[in-house]
Image 1 (tube, helix red, strand yellow):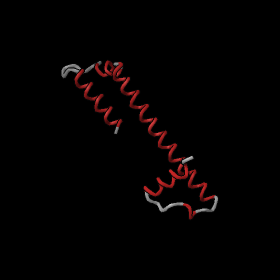
Image 2: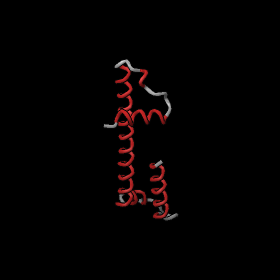
Image 3: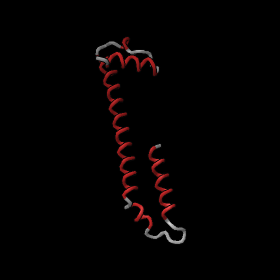
Image 4: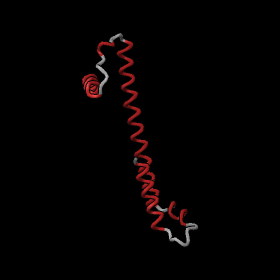
Length: 95
């Protein structure tokens, strides 16, 4: 979603900065523009941060479930529905 938004901004910026009769050399000029590079870097770093956060949360959930299954307490696991799982994890992870 974020990537498509950034791509839309890039296409609009390239379309506005180029003329209809001469497009040679405009693409390299746009790609070396500091504003476009800043937008691309910010978008890509945001995507990396969101992806890594999601992976860390998923690894934590998998480790917690695996720990309870190894201890032999499958009865402690809640029914699999989103609110009960979130409440269970909130209770278990709270200090």
